[in-house]
Image (cartoon, rainbow, N blue to C red; front, side, top):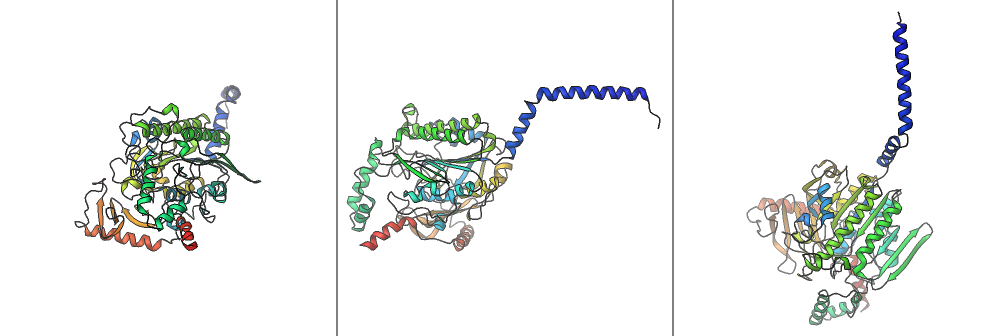
Length: 513
């Protein structure tokens, strides 16, 4: 081979010069670009944080992005615009305790026993709570190294052995049940039960009417709801009663402050933050800075303070530089409590019904998923349920979801904008399967007008054509009725039920007599 020495020398000089330049560049940027890349790689390889924001009795139509003309919710609207807004998202039961049980277990409440036939929710002083055999989302995440915190309403057992810190949460700051409970002057749960057993319905109605009237101008001292701080470490658990009654007008602000502190403290490790707001469950309270601000009145003030809270939490994630590694889920436990008040409760939007009913207004809830760079921004009308949260988070974090029998993994819908794997929704009230949706159609098995009596002939509605469930088309489409009835039979055959836990207390009273 013949070598050109002049050319070889030229390339050697060029290589030397190039090496020197690259070396200088490496020194110049060694503490900036390369470090940033390392940080990004580390963050991309770390487990994502999970934030669940769960309101109490917020209606489908209570947010600006869901169509309310007078309530301003810029923070939640932003999440919906940048994330995924779900129009057809459900809870499996239209009341507090069963809905929260479904979120944390991925199981229908009739599977876990966290429901009641006589009473729909848990009441103060019960010696029972969520079973220790149930694997909560917090327990599953904690087992894989997550720091877990709950700030707000629990409502799955107020005895210390059933506190959230005994079910997978490292830290809890909040109230054990709904903010209207322990009303001053109202008879105890046991006394109310005795009145009911004695047939004193007129007296019961008077007591309940007085209770509902308190919502018109509520005084937080009339509701003896306790505020707890509980924390568990490897050395044991400490429970501290901070105040009773809880000063509710400042509670949303304090929950927000606690959330920011939790995020800031845990920013260097994966965390699960569950913030079940105590509002806008009646009675409604807003901090002084928000009072009289909303065009929608006191209820609007409460929603707008929650929106402020959401904005503060998102800002904390962004400030910590972890927003791009955090899934945020925002929704409600059921529809608005319109049977208690029309003036001070929320809006179900175009839907019929409200809390305590399986019409759309009671079980279809406003829902947003947000994760910058991960969740595909869109408005989707695919079917989803709070039951799906557990397996979806499992797919994201790698935890075991084998116990979440009734949920579906929604990650394909979230990350690619694809179809939801869910095509059916079973809707329960007091442990009874009262309605069933499959695709566009919904079958009602019980009659609202008859006080919840089973229907001899089910009612059928096309929800894509009749969102208010006004026109029963069962006679016109017997083949669709038959298809949904078959789906109901399949669902029931696969459902292994446990006895209603919430009723056991009253069964004990009956047995004592």
